[in-house]
Amino acid sequence: MNNYSQPFAAVKQASRKLIRVSIDQVEDVLERLAELLKEKTWFLLEENQKDLDRMDPENPMYDRLALTEDRILGIAQEIHNVQKLPSPLHIRLEEKILSNGLYLEKISVPLGVIGVIYEARPNVTLDVFSLALKSGNGLILKGGSDAEFSNKAIIQLIYQVLREFDLPQQAFLLLPSDRQATSALLEAVDFVDVIIPRGSQGLIDFVRQTAKVPVIETGAGIVHAYVDESADLEKAKAIILNSKTRRPSVCNSLDCLIIHQSHLPNLEQMLSPLLKAGVEVFADSDSFAALNPNPKISIASENHFGSEFLSLKLSIKTVKNIDQALEHISKYSSKHSEAIIAEKQETIDRFLLEVDAAAVYANASTAFTDGAQFGLGAEIGISTQKLHARGPMGLRELTSYKWVVRGNGQVRN
Image (cartoon, rainbow, N blue to C red; front, side, top):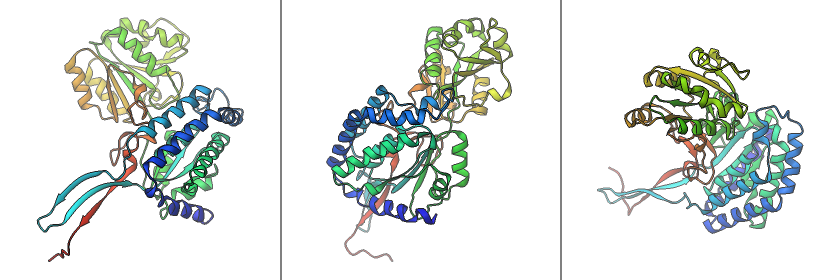
């Protein structure tokens, strides 16, 4: 910890200045950063390629690590989206006048200094910076070694913009990718207000079990879709295909298809687009028996349920009714995103009421669990816990509040 006390203290000190930065200044910084990303796309791609060259393309993390021109344009657009959102600060959440004349206001304020630990996703560096700046928070970033070149290139551009606008770059720190830096951040109780881990279940478990700083848990996405007996087959095919194959390496992608037994005769047709897309299927005994022999389809083991695949893999569970579907989800869900495909309103309502997850869908792809898609501009993570925040976390979730009390000489008896 001693090696990091000074830079951590500098972040905390500099972050106090952010509350005085005007919303116009913040928006100008974000606009300039988005434009600079476009100007320096070639630079980001060169540095990102250095990271990609060190990773096996078959690694499920490869897709998360990769930057492309389109992805950089998308990140720039998300920064523009954050820029256009109203400030989450200085909002009067509540006010009252007590019988003794005291005037109370409950006002939104920054959390303080946020630590973010993440793996091979360089876009996180830009997403969380834009959210932290606009919510008035200092930021300590601890990226993984897989994205080291990419993250250093990104922070270089961030610092360039902060210098252009004379804002305190010391409030935003990128740590080295070694384990010592991770340990120091998790123990930085005097300097950091909250830690937000983003990555694999192993990373999240390690942070939760090790951190002395409070943690907002952004859990793994073990995602289910239940095809009810009342489901429309064409809707089901489209939703399942998109949920699984749009970006299989991200946390909102489908892991387990739960199918009502009445749809077993339709299962071959339902899976056809998935198999064409290269999805490997692990089917329970009932669904396996309903399918034609295929090298991409094998019998599921218990380990295939409750697994976050992060790749083109999918398990199938057959159920007799919604009760069994709800029981399976309750047993294996990570409480991230869960979906039902059905036409019977009573069944839909029951699913939406009873499933315990941060995002629950009816007749829509789970790929929408995303801060930008939810209108939050970007996200700092998807919380699967229930304290403070749940689901995609945007600007408002990066604030707390304080009570402002105005009096005229009142004293308490």
